[in-house]
Length: 288
Ligand code: KIV
Image 1: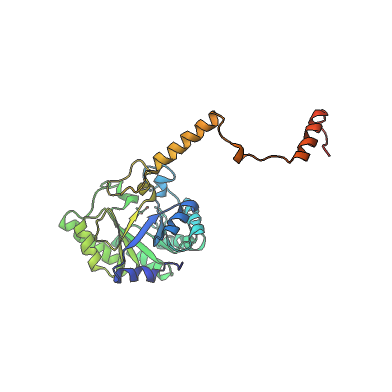
Image 2: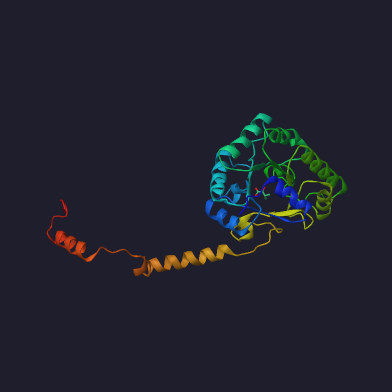
């Protein structure tokens, strides 16, 4: 299967072909996502919550994100891999941002990076693009800092707020980003931004008008307890895993596992020698 490219993603918008994006953080799940034919695997900093158990995405580090990204890159044959730049990897200076973005490409096998922010990160996005790195923007609800300000609230409910989002989207496109995530933006604002931009919008909780959609893998598989309302659940994997584990524990306690089919044997000749040696009382010495 052919690799998905930046040009390919932009072309999909022109062809009105919707873009399917999913998060993943490890080799095994990324292999399944890739086989399913999704266009982009986002190694999201949502890993902080679903993989590491933090209450927000803020604490995850560059080093942790690099490990998750490397594992996903090792699994990929088809999808584009976008690495989420964690908090503090691009806020302190433009030089830091370019350096850390390069690490995702060079050390972790990513094809592109994602940063949260609108007009305030325009210079940073431009510098990363100038360094040759494709960038995905992310506006609307920005989970890295939302909890420090207004909390996890839907964005673009008022005219003023929707106009601010339009300005942010324009700034990110002008900076050279190849796509932009709209998180928890009202349908009306998302629709206006999508029709205004040349680059594709990828929605999460932002309605059906976006050019593509992204979900957190653990939300859609039913593996995470605190999934948001907008995340459609396609499976209830937590119950399936729990059921399997309870049956495993019961089998071990009831001596039903391992069975004959899971057990290895010595051949008859070696077994006779071994038994004779054990009977000779020399088990402290050489069996030669
Ligand atoms: O970290 C993440 O998974 C994300 C998506 C929710 C867009 O940024």
